[in-house]
Length: 328
Image (cartoon, rainbow, N blue to C red; front, side):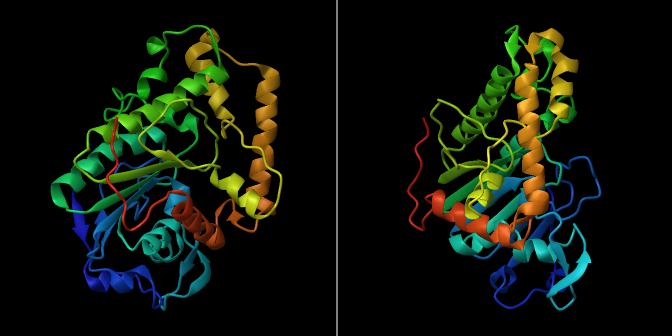
């Protein structure tokens, strides 16, 4: 990992009271694991504020703060739109907002279009960096889980083709046949959570307090893990704030069914009535965040990020006197 230190003259101009007021050092990683667009900027950054705690915030476009309004040179909101505006990320996305609530440093890795396999692959690299280069009394980890279909894109790339998750994304490694899509999704989400759990077990020397949350899809499990799962999904939480009825889909990209058909053929059975019901839920969800929600403009808006930061701070149980987590 190669971090590039930004001199103060390269820092964004933000209003007083922002996270940069108490920032000592600001670093970027220009060579992070990107998603489909290699031109994405400000996807991985590290803010040092000389705090005893660190928030490690991992996710995709919703964590990144995509489509938030850009800032003018004076730090105020502009009418123009720029999805790669570092200033507005630092001012309005939930990661920096949560950092201020926790009074911590911040290391954020969030790439628009990112996948679970990318995030979990990079998590180990990030924790290794933290172990070897920092000394924090407490480390909060917020891991976002997103749409399953994205992983089919990355499964055979060199850095993840032998990963825990890639094993269930290829037919040659599929040992149970036939099963339903619901069964496959259950195995998928259990594998995601197992991978997170097992990675954390390798860093028992760090005082880690981890959570996992999702923006789109609900996922259930009967297993016990060394992290706290935040419910409901971000979209569902926004609906609760607005007193609107909402049912969470179990996947969010209709192309997932095509990916499963292409990869597994008759090994994974798709019930058409169930699939159509999920499509209906997805359509309602897209319409809600695209047209009917105060907290979204497809992606979360400024109000949505602020509310989510407060919700995570409240439901995570994170406090200034966090005790060491015991891993099983």
